[in-house]
Structures are given as C-alpha cells and as structure tokens.
Image 1 (cartoon, one colour):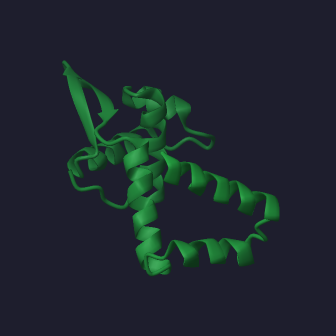
Image 2 (image 1 turned 90 degrees about the vertical axis):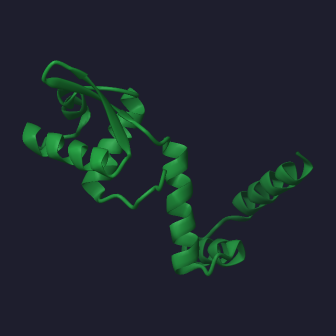
Length: 123
C-alpha cells in the first residue's frame, strides 16, 4: 500500500481512528476537539481517506464502522522520510544539527541520543 501525505484535517481524523482502532463517524466526531466540525464534514473526510486506501470499513446496513489500514508508526515513518529527503538531503547529521541550533539541544539530550544510538548498534 502506498502511504500518501495527509491534509491537517485527514491527519486529525486518522489520529482519532488510530486511538479508537475502529469507530463510526459519530465516535470519531465525539473525540474531536471543540469547535467540532459538522457530521457531514467528518463523514466526507473519512470517505476521502477510504478512497486513498488508508481507511477500511465494515458495513452494518446503511452505517459503516471505519478502521485504519495503516498504523500510526507507518505514517510517522513516511512523514520522517518526506522531512529527511525534502529538507535535510537524507542526512541525519543535518537533521540533528538543525535541532542543535534551532532548539538549543542540551548536552544531556545529546548524551541521551548517543546512548540510544549505542544501544541500537549493540542490538
């Protein structure tokens, strides 16, 4: 399955579906923050996600119970690949350098990253 970039509204709906694991439009709507969009708006966005191949459903008469066809982890991986290729030339060094400069990465956080890399290498 091809993961595609989501609009903000689509991503918000997917986050709810990942949390719920499955649900009807009314269930998704109940989880959205105020001001809540119209029921028809949520329904339309879910159908768009279905057409994109990211959401499946089970029909119960005229109602549909929706569920995600990709995991949140798969989408995060896709987004990171887009970010890395689009802004950092696929260089982890450039990404970390950006956060060191822009976010004032502390020495403690840098050491935690080094520890993570060392553990990953040893696995």
